[in-house]
Image (tube, rainbow over all chains, first blue to last red; front, side, top):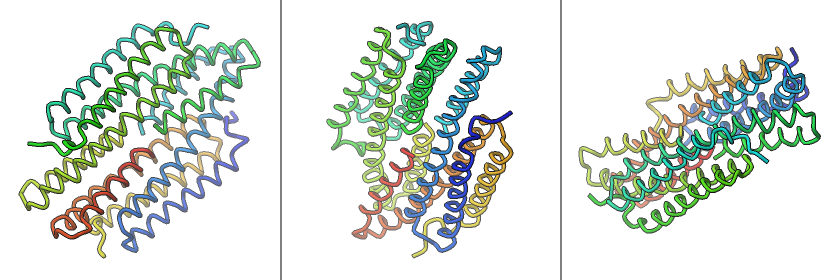
Length: 94
Length: 94
Length: 94
Length: 94
């Protein structure tokens, strides 16, 4: 099954590559005894970058997987909506 | 237009009444010079209660307003999904 | 014991009064069948207002209760710091 | 200057290594067209892992850098507390 984010795969992978680089940057900062506050600032930036990936995935999921399931009037439409709501709750609480 | 939360109005109003009570409780705590940490604990609890109201509203919106707009194949379906995504982003970032 | 927020009590109470008003405003919106997205926007605004109260309380606690306990070299200094860290964790996760 | 997290460097680096692995795992999931909801679940888990690193760094900073600055009665004590409060605000809002 083609996931909702198919058209955005390159963009998502580029973001994840950048986040990987940010995490390795954090390792270097800790290795070099960087001041705590500067490391914390970089952790907050990395968290926000991850959040942006999540919101993009969610938007794609709503506008493709959920929308298609509802439009086709299939039995799984309600389940798709429930799944999306649960994912949103996890995101809000993380 | 009947909002998606129509069937849950009584439950939502009961939750909002409780949150109103929690906020007045915070005012009393501050008035009585309650220890900061105890006031902070109550603020976190009130924030989580508000979050639960938001997640309930979002679930209702997805499963009624968005789902109905998509099922009817109307021109506003895509707009409804976009609106929901923007509301989720605000919620995640608050 | 005088809490760390003593000098900011009037400001905190004014904020809490406004938040109480926002919560009652939410009740009116739901009562009047206001569109879900508009109610959600108001919930996010109320959550951010609560967050601002929490951050103010935490700043007062650190710069008075924790700072005084550490400066006086008392046995409870470490405990005060631990308490503050736990309160921060609850706040970050709410 | 020795940062507050010095005694926890090995633990922090181990966590950051794991988070790096989680981010690469996300790249693989996207590459393999994994269902959106499963990718979102992994993003939430990675966000929580980053949050745990941040809270650990903050606890170390409070109990070493801030506590030492206050105990030594230096002029930078108030500034250290202010820095910590600002870092907490960024964390709460990320």
